[in-house]
Length: 423
Image 1 (spheres, one colour):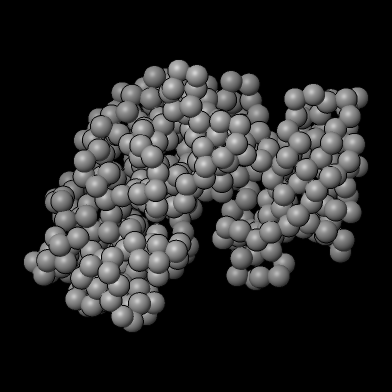
Image 2 (cartoon, rainbow, N blue to C red):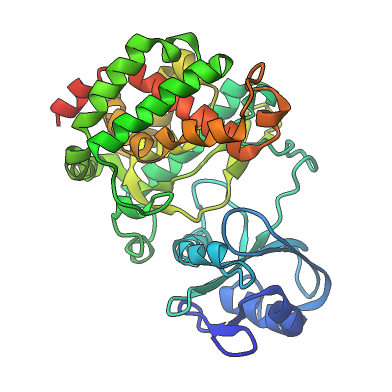
């Protein structure tokens, strides 16, 4: 990257801005060349003017901006755009995540193909420079709450959503179509090859696995949390018998983690290109004239080939626990039906469930048993319930609590040791 904040992209071969000031300096001239290079603009059309460029900070990595433009000689292109930079030069911790954009750029370029099986934000330009981790993605801006598109739904607040079951049916249907289309061989092979199977790359961070003793200490903190905040966990998850069972069973998993990952990658029929983090806050919804609910997906930073269990947990880890208990089997059937209809092989729901439990065990033990310590520090005094503003208005708190609850709920309702012994 040069001193002016520009880097040469690896895919489209154009110098691209690393931050909003560089984009502002490049202006309509850069955008015209970029949109032509991507194929969004024809050679006789251009970006005539930049009418808005407003930077903001959001998400966990990089910087973002709202961009609006006027065109000359172009019809049908969106004028209100969203810009995502991989870099955040003012925050070293956020800048560490800059490499996540490489696969998002690859996916955005793939999504331009005719007949792409699901709705994603229209890509006008995307490129990435691997040596510096510099990337930029420019897409249409989704107009939540306008033009027939529903309002945005926040993560882990499905209790504010109308018809949650219908929304998860639409969400999982879209994921199933994409995965099935890949398995059917209907995505360009030369682009799919840019997403090698590397499931452990799709992680929320890297650290040394906990030992059995460390996991047991975290279960002990869970027991402390259950006593200190009895209103924040369902009765069955606070039961000392369950906590004692969990404390005993977690010791079997640290030495088996590598085996679990090999098992999840072992059958290619159950591995497909898809979205790893398709919570409802990374989706948008609208209804067709016949009333059928449709779903589009954005924020593809962790995209790749993965076991389908990872897709399901990524979509439903933030769902209400009762959604798992009352509707998961039907939602799984719908997901697998969409997968088959798109050309994927017929899969066994029981196998997908086993894979799901193994993956949830790995992810939950790695990350979610830290939640009690976090919440005990955050909440020195008991709160009435999880809808209290101290939790509901804090995305980190409400998300961690609900995801941990879903992890524990799955453990409590299934024979996790039996699943582990079966691989």
